Amino acid sequence: MINWEKFNELFQYFDKKTIFEVIDLLIDSHEESLAKIRQCIKDRDFPAINKSAHYLKGSVGNFHDPITTDLTLKLMEMGDNKIEEGLEETFAKLPPAVDLLIQELLEYKKKFK
Image (tube, rainbow, N blue to C red; front, top):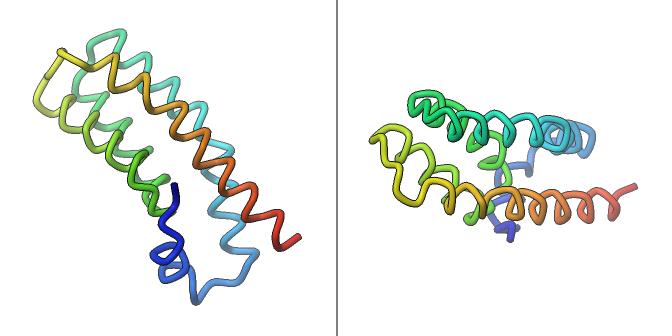
């Protein structure tokens, strides 16, 4: 769930068009980002897991959703430390969390259309 207080604090000086553009960037790129992380995990390419999770963390971090942020941070740590145990299980939680975040953001956009 989005921390709306922090979200509003971050975006308070932006117009709706700019906020929507940032939201759309996540919507447009999340599937590719998740597929990249999935492939890196399959390949056990730990530096790429770290890098790909970091990229997604930057995107989801804009919206102050602690669940997706924590999952991407954990994947970054696992990639950085070459931790295999729990890697797939941690990743498995990420796509549904990102989907929920996107649903919240789409609902937010609907309020201003």
